[in-house]
Image (cartoon, rainbow, N blue to C red):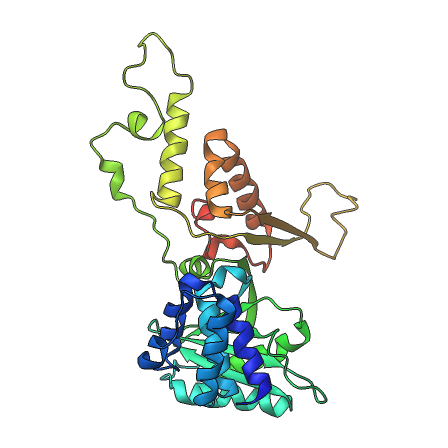
Length: 345
């Protein structure tokens, strides 16, 4: 086994918490069950690592074997990465082709290797018809850096791919080209979504978030169930704006549902519109260049944060503002396709 491979495996194992080590090694499926039983996982981690490296040397682990271990570790610790979403589309009149995973892998790898002399690409398929791709980038004169890879998760027969954020932005166009051609799409665009929680991004773009309406027929009165009112409260107390509170609560529940929201950390709303005015001679009315605006939303849990604005009446104000902007926009991309907040514009 090459020294660089041994060092790569060593660094990866050192990152793995001891309580997860056995699980990840079994998922790796490189070392046999009998070999793992020879390892005393209760001793110091340095001793455990040395023993595991020795076993890997006996089996002559390759660079691809080491990369697979790193992919599995990343799958267990997805939240340590920041993920961006990319959406692909077919050309006009193009039909959906049957997906061949082997053909996709070969095509993706060849495109990158033709463009870059030094690049290593590794794949790992999952049970959800997804393939995890690990790309270690090099240059024409330097070997691939195995410690700063890019990860891509592509769900077969869908137009969506998820990419870990990387400082090597110069390689993003090449990566997009490889994804587009290998998956037989026509073009690819980056969506205005970003989060550390890959499952939440997937739930949003695949519209898997829960928006249940059947709970409205609950036998519990709305004001007791959702407005936090005490049924034993003194009847002489007058609840102001009770009708408005019920309406806000009803709309919030219809929009977001009863279950926890997907954990989204970043989203943005783009507006591009021309100024409209009935006044002649207005400076803005004569402006040919459209007005452009970018509204960014950021929060550790963005959708839950927006949902919590409803009781403070801020929810409807933001909604009206964005809906008004959307009605005046021309050819802009908004959040309505994947964030439930704007479904009632």
